[in-house]
Length: 437
Image 1 (cartoon, one colour):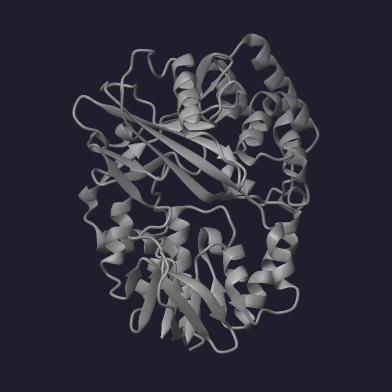
Image 2: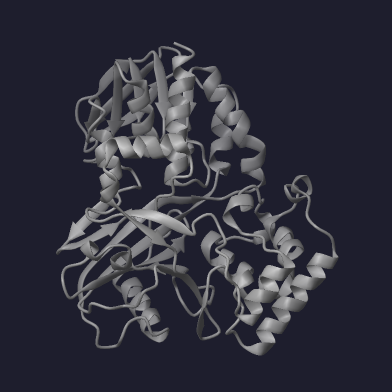
């Protein structure tokens, strides 16, 4: 039997492509993992913002086979940054027009000085810290006014300790012309990996995972893997709330749960693997969702907040993706607050601080009535790319593969990835497994 731990997109995709005798063990009561939606008083809240990009033909074919095209709205991104008391389009580095003149001057001067310092060759960039890469790529002004404060809020660590393997697709690098045109307000080009995206018309982002799960007959919900015995090639599962333990032999095993959790529950690991696991770092996110008794909150999709005066680093507007996300006459908004694993915040105080911040920047009004609220803790949320990860991730995954265990996906592979990546990694894991059994 093939066993897959976790019914997120990677696990479901792997099981779908494996077919046959495959069991998927999922701790939650439904599919999707992080790609889930919850309905509260007529509002559909995702576990924070999820947008679907389908660049790869095989992923487009898979999604088309699961859901008709009319399931999705096709949307051109309208994202912004709130800083220095004004909204400017995303990304910051090519949209400084509208900021105070002295800020624009600092950003342009710093960028030109960085350009004069020489271009960053890809092989050289990988050896830099994220802080050093930002200064070399954008200069001191853009670093000071956006890149440093925003990323410090998100990652909650010294940016000099971060590596920059992830920046090639996540952080757009413009030309001199792009930066100058952005300062003059004549930029016409979309930047970044997400200038357009798909979002379901109704049901939230979970409709994708639900459609995929419907094609996978061997999913068992409400059970968690509590032990993997690599020598005996068995997985022990039990009901998530406790109960009788069931031990199941496997021919192949794919785990999509967080890599440190897999290492913790696995017996028969190679020497030293357990000792490096605590060094894999991440941040959690508190996702605060509000249902608002007002129809129009504007036409923005999401906004970044680098300023320290806001507890959140980003907010988004589900009803701007689809009107079906909120009841008639209402809108919704989510905000994201980065916190350290194990850290706790008072939810009432947090919701109040989020509301006050949204009023301060003009998104909400003081008299707006909040008619629904839900706070999700996403743990882990973002993997921290640091030197420990760079040094130990490859050997850790290789050691697990050597004893017949594959670990893949956003958290199984301990990486920063998209929904499309998750679908692809599940298919690739299935292909690798079929080649070994």
